[in-house]
Length: 94
Image 1 (cartoon, rainbow, N blue to C red):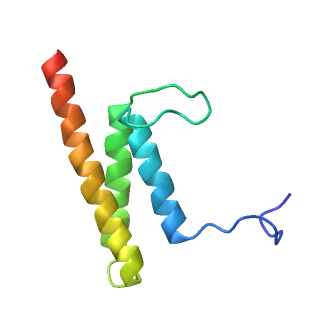
Image 2 (image 1 turned 45 degrees about the vertical axis):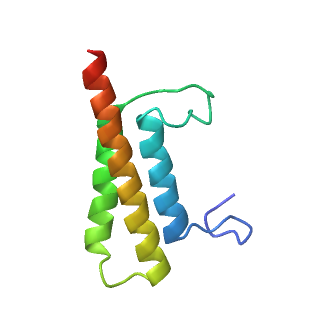
């Protein structure tokens, strides 16, 4: 199968952001790895993924639909809150 084949699912901006969000959530241990079903924490990867989404928000400013902008903003708010909560839990358990 090649990328040009018509039956391949086309990725759009929304699904790309949701995929990045899932990766960040997985890194924070909020959702299990879909391949193993296990919780795998990698806070550095989660932080980096959040930073990538922030970069995309900055670089796409003015080029998104209102729905895409709203999704991006709500995903970032949710991820930032969860990241701070995870960081605080880790600090308390040390």
